[in-house]
Length: 267
Image (cartoon, rainbow, N blue to C red):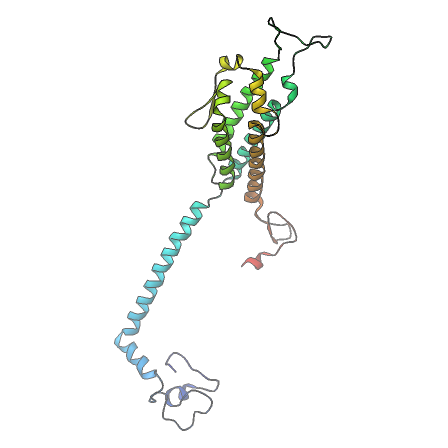
């Protein structure tokens, strides 16, 4: 028993000071003067100021603990910072443009021999095949531009999932740096591509074809990761803009869905 609490169901203030706690407080000289209670001890602690010191010490410890937890929370929030919907949509758009460029370069018809009006293959002076190099070179240029835009925009994100896809693309590009160099494409220190159009004009069309067309090619690998990046960016942008909202009837919804819990369910 203590000055600050009364135990038992039938204790009144008289019982608190002069009787024992429990249901049969009749024949004990406990309470305030009993050996089994702490009322006098509590009063002594209060009078001497020890209680105040104890409480101050306790709350100081609590504040320090909360401060440490706050630091941890801040760090966690910083490491898990959300990307803005605008940045995510830019990445999605850049990834889609990269996919379009790769689709064009991966089209087998791009590498067919030129034909005349009668459908006969046009051959060069030495009997070599003639291709629509202007169209091929334009597609390669489009690829380089869209690749660089994607690398730049995705590199500004905090999303580890999208950054992981970008890293895979960059690694794959470095593995194919030899063949890319043969068609005039080199890799800069910033992981962006540089195109030598003069060298591209002299490049073997077969090399371009092997790089970008067909399953298992460099182009198909980049395409798969760009497609995944576009999906991830779209999903994250949707979550960030619709992740928490109120429906028309005032209920709180997740991911903009209906029929969800009311706001009170999250309080």
